[in-house]
Length: 294
Image (cartoon, rainbow, N blue to C red; front, side, top):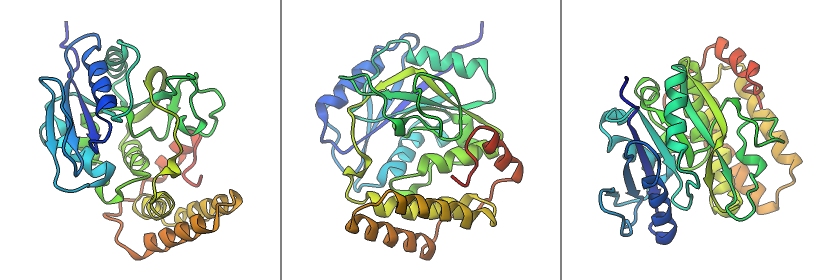
């Protein structure tokens, strides 16, 4: 019999949700199968009390979501290679089922091309999954699992071979679109991504705009995402579509001002190494239901 896949988990925290963090860690510890080693990263804040056996890393400054998660990856060896796959979980989430880790193991073991699994996020009180939490254009039925082209940052599992091959999350993004950047690089390397409705993370319903930097970061990182990953002819198409969609949504004056400030910043600041995806990957994304112009 083959050895079961070894799983680790990375949780970043600002230290301001100790009760929710403890509940999440208890739900990870309660998973069926082999023990999951957990690392909690204090992102510029002390880590609250955690159960015995949970490792902690406290950073002197907030590195942002991708930066904090990258530190958690390295806690499992270079590129996370001490384990076969890593779960990335929000510190105010909770795994309501005990078989989620085993479902991850089985999915990865059954499909060697599967690199990333995106969990379904559901409100713990209503059970509702917000449309924005279904990572595909046809999101009306959140209970339908499918191949997808991106994933949810705080509710997923990533095979560490993906990170070793394409690199970690883009730390300079700080917040927003870092998952799509990794997803596009993984797809360009030949990996696949699944959205699994049966792998659930409970998380309170929230609006992404609750973050003060939301509009600026979303716009800046959208430009960086295109500049880093898209073939040159698609960059203006992709960004033009998103500019039009933003205007059609009629944001408030301050929000629109912040968005345009971020859009300008995306063009005027370094975006990191440019590695445009192959045209074959563009076609692959299109066949998966989301061409990289939307």
